[in-house]
Length: 166
Image (cartoon, rainbow, N blue to C red; front, side, top):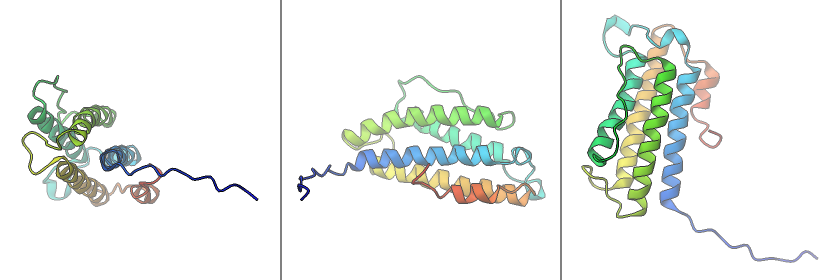
């Protein structure tokens, strides 16, 4: 008869869980950009108004930088992206860099006093803000790609929701 060894339960770590979700969200952003048809990157929005996908992506990175400057002004600044000239590869590299900078600062906040300088109420709410902001823009990107005649492949659209494997 097999022994019934007692398995020790590992306590749930909310801070680690939230940061893992933020990392997944960043990977989803990059997955979307890599799956985006090249023609969609600078396609002119309907009626010639609004941001291109390139400028939306630059905005995501540049908003992260705005927050990094506010939260950790003594840290070295990363380069902003020019929405008119950024390439997809440059945007992906920049998103990786701004993610890494945000990750380090937010991990410290979540395992420290839970505060984010310049943002109320707390670090958990700040992460929720980032999720909402970036998710909103992922939706804009997929809609704009479709509206300009360069839709994101269906396999990529489904892949955006595969958080357990990304």
